[in-house]
Amino acid sequence: MKANARSWGLFSLGLFVLLAFTAGLSLSVGSACIRFADIPGIIAAGPGSAEYGILLGIRLPRTLLGIAMGGALSLAGTLLQGMFKNPLVEPYTLGISGGASLGICINILFKLYAVIGIIAYPLSGFAGASLVIFLVYGLNRSTRHIRSNRMLLTGVMISYVASSLVMLLMALARADDLQTIVLWIMGSLDEPDMALIRMALMGSLAGLFLSYFFCFDLNALALGEEEAAGLGVNTARARKGIFFIASFLTGLSVSMAGVIMFVGLIVPHFMRLVTGPDHRILLLASYLAGAVFLLMCDVVARTVIAPLELPVGVITGIIGGVVFIWAISRKKEDL
Amino acid sequence: MTPSPLVEIQDITLGFGHRRVLSNISFDVPAGRIVSVIGPNGTGKTSLLRTVCGNLEPFKGKIVLKGKDIARQVRADLARQMAVVHQNLEPLPMQVQAYVLLGRLPFFKPFQFFETGKDRDLARHFMTVTGILDLADSAMDQISGGERQLAALARALTQEPEFLVLDEPTAHLDITHQARILDLISGLRDRLGLTVLMVIHDLNLAAEYSDFLVLLNKDKGQIHAMGTPEQILTRKNIQAVYHTPVRVNKNPQSGRPCVFIDRAGA
Image (cartoon, rainbow over all chains, first blue to last red; front, side, top):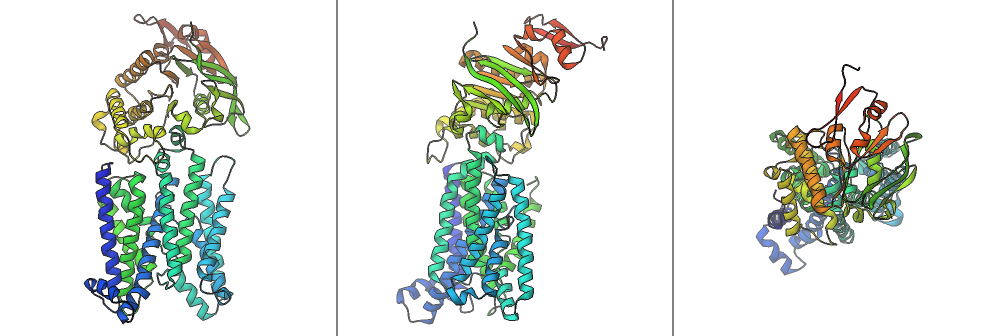
């Protein structure tokens, strides 16, 4: 894609329109079908109707959470792939999801939610994620640089350790706790608390805003550490900043919606194929496309065996994987 | 008369881990001159350049650019004065034009999002003088290694540096492009007073285009000799450092030394 304000602006506008359309679809589709054209009327009529309750009490929170989490995961993947110059890195590679899963398991098994309420889920998830973030960072911090490859390996190892601990806790859990853990691990956008959703949306958008302070650094880092330094980039500071933003976004999404695989791997790849490697457009494009993709997957998850619903993480894996294999099989060059 | 130094390499000792590669290296790079570092493979020439660029911390010593220790300067300030062309350039899925425009990154103002018209003109100008304008829309991973080298030089020149550091600038180039690059660099030295420090393996190109040479000795990890090409490229110096019999003649046109392998003396 040509690097200029006009083509980037048009492309971003197109993605915004697509996101609006997908959000409308997410509001309309479900076990009770609400026509898209009726939505403004239902909202204007105010509370009282069943449709109003479904729309604003169930589907709007879910749609907003889908936008926030899809955007956050995809953006985190774009940041990490750019920083590590490795197309296989995704938000969960660094073990952050493992830490969050462990935190949630502990919450469920020790019934922390009974003491501090429903907020115990995101809190325990975020605590687990934060612990891993500081562990990975602390173990790989030298005086001047973050050691990228060591950081990746440490993250993968922490992920394995956390997964093993989660499995250990699952083995010790009672049947009803076990089901809660399994459902949570598969990922879901079912979160009715609007305060938490507002927080997630604001955190996700803050991540997008902050990531733009590093868009030029990411472009330069694509050339390599020393070439980036030669272009005036403080590579150590840039890596720290990018790592913490990506980790925050990952921790946020895992603690709010569980482990939703593939969004942070596939969407950044797909967008890079479309926009090219310039992070000035890639960051926004990945965020918007991640939101669209997760909302679409959630619509499928809600409708394919309605009135029952599938875990959205299963759908992201199936649809994302198939579409991605199709896309790269059409591309002649190497990635 | 030798102009005042733009860059001073002061008593640099460098290496990796506990292993010393070079010890007590000191020399100046005078403003508006081309200085080439020569020596056998594995001497530490590239490591020395990395130290000069601030990418490899020396065990001791310092690099002074325009009177200031580079270790105490902000990266962006350095990038506005010094540009580097590295030896091994990765093939990237990035357009040549976008790659060259990255040279304007150090000049971006806070919250500037797009390149200015001047940035684009400069990139276009240096793509023209390096002969890669017709590749502007090609991807860096779809052009040859030599063309990538030219793009890297165009990117470095787009930084409008006073001091240009080149690591093997002619490594992947045919004779036409070798001459083109080095003529361009010496032309920029003559017209704009560009100061250049380069590592180069080809002794004849070094002799032809350099004002001063620094010959490194691998055995001692020190400077063997430094001076003008005529002073340095002698049979005795070359045989002492490279352990290869050579003959040294004069280029009949430029009068500079020419080095030939002496197969009869082997």
